[in-house]
Image 1 (cartoon, rainbow, N blue to C red):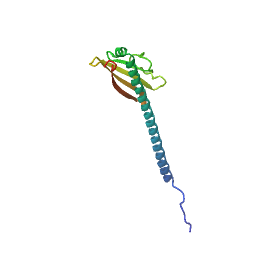
Image 2 (tube, rainbow, N blue to C red):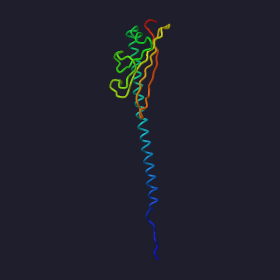
Image 3 (cartoon, one colour):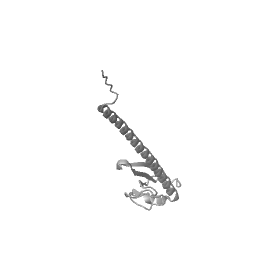
Image 4 (cartoon, rainbow, N blue to C red):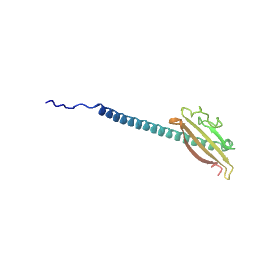
Amino acid sequence: MLIATNKGQSLFELIVAVAFISLVVLAVIGLATKSIDNSSFSRNRTLASRYTQSAIEWLRSQRDNDWNAFVSRAQGGRTWCLRTLTSFNNPGPCGSEEYVLGTNNFWRQVILDYNPGPPPRVEATVITSWRGSSDKIHESRATTVFTNWKAE
């Protein structure tokens, strides 16, 4: 009497096992990709917040140095591209290649709006933008109001 023992796997079982392993690998790769995207977004958001805050501090120094010059740049609701924080030398919104100096993915601009008051004040909205994954544009935005505190 011959007894057959099936100690191997059938082709169907092998295909099911390979399919299951493939799904697990794809899920792990998807999670890793999403994690990398989230990490990149978080890093860029932090950098954009720093660029935005440094522009606010620079604007504060410009206000303190010469209130009248500061107001003249804001009259009529002016937009300035702030590639560097050295001077108001780039009027208008930033173009597609006008990155913050030292970066290749961040644009920073300020919208200044003068209100004669009383008291006279300048509202400044700093917007730092960057292109994320899938070419989506993200922003870090901060608004502050400047007054001539030396005259008060």
